[in-house]
Length: 432
Image (cartoon, rainbow, N blue to C red):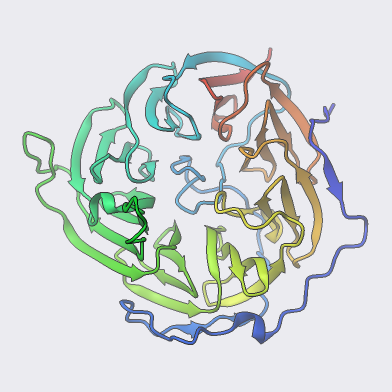
């Protein structure tokens, strides 16, 4: 029997709101056609129709929740579906008081708590390694066998996920001058991207650029006595004008967005396609078909955009009364071409045709959703962990007494969930 959570699902009635009509004026081409240092010419985004997927799918192909927002596609998807019913605490681990947790990463055997101090744990709650967070993201490699972290000096460190031992460190291309929001590695291929940091306390030299770097390195690693990597291969990097840069990766394709431009590269940063418009991107995620889902600021206000790999702007949905576009959680792709937009105070459901059918009101600004393999979702919101089905009907799985959740609930398997509170790492299992 479904238990109604302390969430309010607001239905927009039986009649769906039709999508706002699109016109070429909504996708104006910037005055400057320069996309230096990209060598590929930039074509204007064009309105059109993106064909709905022939096969319904929601699951990420990887079993690793390797990034703060899921896998490298930034879509907050899990390859697991947990069992229904009430859950209980199987193990509780106190975090460092200075942690200030903001989420977690998970593979089948390991959990990383994100915060001012990141911490790697095994399934038994044993801490394997911890360190101060530096100038960028902390992530699992895409296979889950290593933890990647930027330290305070701007060096990239690779740790064994099995033992917590430091395998090597290597200087990132711009060191501590850049906040590397995207950090991922697949096999020997490494990719970092982010915007210049504001380092001048007087504001006389504000950030003006962003940076992308790719390189290859494979074991056995050649390191010195301080674990400094002696060489990398096939290194490529770009300095880009403008401090705003968001990105996501799926398979061989890397999709980046900066002011007035979306560009697609391979993992070696060779440009495949480039598209121009008039917009400022805030967040970006990819669905399993390679479509980019963006929250953008435009000259007509905040918008949700769905863009195909061919540069077709299939959905251009105004966000009215949603409290603006938060520069935080990327859009959440769902099965059948639907998407949840994480806005201030609500999750807004957008149908495949662009209509707005329902919203989930949120209690906490730290609420987080993870899409499960069956298309349902796990939602942590305030003190409540709930499962929501495809119609957004909710079932309470677990409730905290005197704490609040501080990140998503991520499944290690169908009967094991990891979640952080403001003070603890909890391992949950179904109640007997």
